[in-house]
Length: 410
Image (tube, rainbow, N blue to C red; front, side):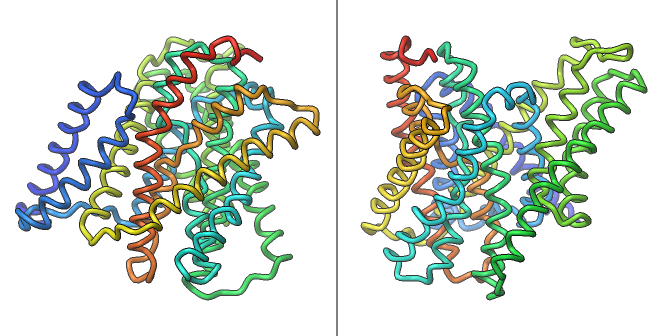
């Protein structure tokens, strides 16, 4: 690598980290999440480069880096916060919303998009698969300001995590259909889907268990050892799952994260002291913050670097998104009531308002091939369905949580 190129990369990193510090300092208490500001900064930088200073360096993320590095690190950062005991307590609602959320979104978002854009149905479903991954992380800081029931928080976080894993599996299948024109039989798809999920859960859990047991056996609780093993676990679980076992790398990382944390914080003759590595959680929280900001900034840059179509389609896709989420949450809650797992109406409203699209959805849209004919318009739509809800829903959620504290109790 030439010295000038290296200096350019270092300068970009420094500027980005400076923006990250400024946004998180001055806007940390606003109802607009930092992700919205990074979308705006990305667009602003792209417009500055496009119309005033064309010599400014471009900001692109290689699809392979997104898939094999950013994605597993993001999933591990989120997965390590959930304990299996919490998941078990709300397993039925989490599993229902995760499965229903992804597969219902394929129809509720994909079909209307195909109709409105006059494109192939498989292309509409491909876009729906990319943006079906919900992420309440954008309003997590806001939710922490209120005393929400643990069950509600678990459902929000658990739905998002397993939803992400399922969305990536469906996305890769839809990519084969929409881009490569492959044909997949329903029976073969069902078998591959079961193996992708079941095999990933078993492998990920065992891999995380072995890694954590190795840490306890060593009795080496230094920051360098725990963080090194956890990073290795996140990246290698994804690669082994995707490239060797042909299972869902996202689910494998998620399972390995929960298994690793369960064993790492367990009890027994060689149990790890709970205060042995005070930097473990802050490190993964910070890494998640940086990667989130990077993805939102990149989406803004990619969108601002091209002509942005101002049409009714932008409003229509927001309406489609809101309608699909409402159907999944409220109709799904009715099904859960029949299954004798009722959710209070106030919980349903929080799930509705907290179902924002997030970094996984952005990563999947950015991973679309450059020569895919609909990538540019899909990038613009992804920008809209991320930016507009980030401006509106957190404010509504803040007002609602402030006015209904008693109603949120189970």
